[in-house]
Image 1 (cartoon, rainbow, N blue to C red):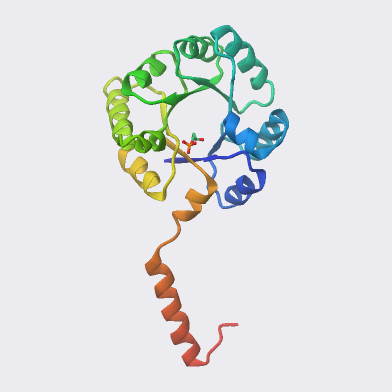
Image 2 (image 1 turned 120 degrees about the horizontal axis):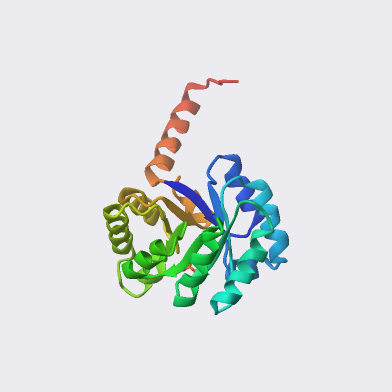
Amino acid sequence: MKFFVDTADIDAIRELNELGMVDGVTTNPSLIAKSGRDFKEVAAEICAMIAGPVSTETVALDAEGMIAEGRELAKIAENIAIKVPLTWEGLKACKVLSGEGRMVNVTLCFSANQALLAAKAGATFISPFVGRLDDLNIDGMELIAEIRQIYDNYVFSTEILTASVRTANHMKEAALLGADVATAPPAVIKAMASHVLTDKGLDAFLKDWEKTGQKIL
Ligand code: G3P
C-alpha cells in the first residue's frame, strides 16, 4: 500500500520522506488554511521534494470553473494531482481533466455508487473518507471493502485512496482490504511504530544491560 501524507506541513513531509515513507501528498483547503501559507508556494515546495503525486484541490462549484482551476493548478508542477469533489459537476470536470492526461483525485466520496461513477469518469484516485463515516457510526472501512470489490469486478484502474484516516488501525485495515493508497496525518504514520510491549521490552533489556556494567562503544 502506498503512503500519502495528508498535510501541508513541509517539515513533517521532509522528516517522513527521509525515511522513505512518502509516496505522495494530499492537501485540501482546510490543510492549506492551517499552514497559513500561499497555496501555490507550498504546493510547489512539496512537488519539488516528492516524486509522487501531490493533490491540490479546486474550489469552484461548476465544472467549467473546476476545469479552469485544475489547469491552473497543473502548471505548478508535473506531479500535481487535481482534486475535484464528488458532485455531478466534479465528475464532468474529472472526465475532461483526465481526458487531457492529468491526474485527477475525486474527493469527498462517501458511497460505493459515487466511487463507481468516479471510475467511469476516469479518476486516477478515488478518496473515500473513512473517519467522517465512522463519526456518524457508519463503518468507513466497509466502504473501502465495497469499492475494492466493485473495482476488482470490472478491473477499473482507479486507485482507492483511503482518506480521513484518523488512527493507526485505519492504516492496518486499509492495507488488509487492499486499498491502493492511504493518506494520513504525520502523527498517525508515526503512531504505527508504537507498541506498549516494545517500550516495556526495551526498558527491561536496558535495565539488565546496566547490570552487566558493559559498554558497546
Ligand atoms: O484526507 C482527507 C482529510 O484531510 C480529511 O480528514 O480528519 O478532516 O476527516 P478529516
